[in-house]
Length: 258
Ligand code: GLC
Ligand code: MG
Image (tube, rainbow, N blue to C red; front, side):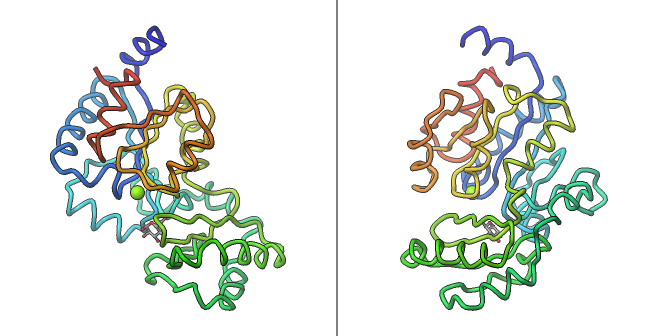
């Protein structure tokens, strides 16, 4: 482990982080982390990727508000959109991959029979993502029923429930983890050179990628902690500090930062 740590420290890595309550949430620690990330990007060619459930509009709002540094790529709408080239258009190869087995209209019409599902704002309804608010008290009852109704319609979809309130319905072949693998292959990073950071349910897919390094911030939500306890892995670090402070702690633990 010590040897691996030293080797990684001098090399570039693929840094992937969720935004809300992971990168963002402690302004002072974020300032320090931004500085360290800019430095390693410049010195080693580290790639910085934000992976968030937010749409382009809500991402831009947060970026402006918190002065986030420019990423090398963006994974938005919980992994259903990848932005690589700065044109403002999502990567078409990725979109094409998600199209098979997906029918947005059928997803929407299937959900109308569930009165517990409250549609999120229009900006958060995306080509490959249908999003609702669902109260935690109803989730355990509604989610299996909804899943079985969607299956009956013959769709290849996945339900992602986060923070005891957000429900995203997306194509089976998409989530933050699969989007990161797509980028890793494109940029030729192996799993051991990849580190992902998160705090809630929609980050579980990030941590599920085998052999990738993971940092769970100290303020993580119960659904992520429960998954972590049920799927223990040495390649995952549970930080004590919150948000960017936890990320700094984890990057040092793995030897990505000195
Ligand atoms: C962000 C998105 C929302 C989504 C949630 C969880 O808050 O704006 O649409 O449901 O992340 O992925
Ligand atoms: Mg989060």
